[in-house]
Amino acid sequence: MKTSIFFFLLLFSFILRAQEESSKEDIQLITDSTFIETEEDIELFEEVSDLDPKRSAMLSALVPGLGQIYNRQYWKVPLIYGGLAAFGHLINYNNELYNAFRNASIDRSNPPNPIVTIAGSDATLIRNRDNFRRNRDYLMILGTIFYILNVVDAHVSAHLDEFNVNEDLALSIEPSFDTSFGQNIGASFVIRF
Image 1 (cartoon, rainbow, N blue to C red):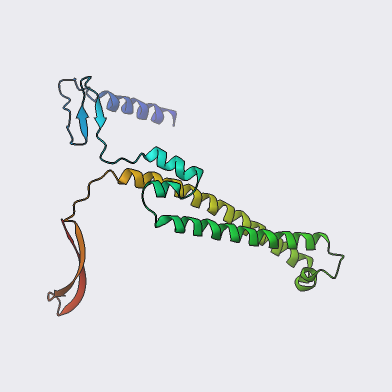
Image 2: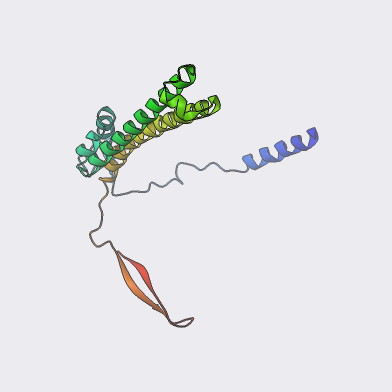
């Protein structure tokens, strides 16, 4: 076993030595329209947009939706606040039921508690308590992910604003007729550049 590992490492070292180093004369710079050269021969990114992705992400992290307003994507703000409100409501609902079942399982000797009379057994109380605690915790995690996605969306949208989109780009749905295997009628998606 040790000899096979030794031969494998020896073979691997020969493979690594087989790579040739290229000289600086062989390297060619690929020029792109998005890069400009300055007097100091430093390539800089030519910005097309006036939006700063870092600023957009910071604004959205401080106040959810503010990065989308900075990006001029006003239609996303109600979606963000609607999602945050839904998560907040569901977390509060599950937390209240968790506390009610927890208190009922602690105070099992007090029969006027309506949850104790409905649940019946201790096992049912404990199972419901654990289910509502688990649901509350999962919703907290999903709410945090939703908040992080809000920040990521603002950052990515600010970056994507820098790209020039050709106005001739179009997607259309057109009817299609196929006669290769009989008469087939359908729809096709056509992309025009």
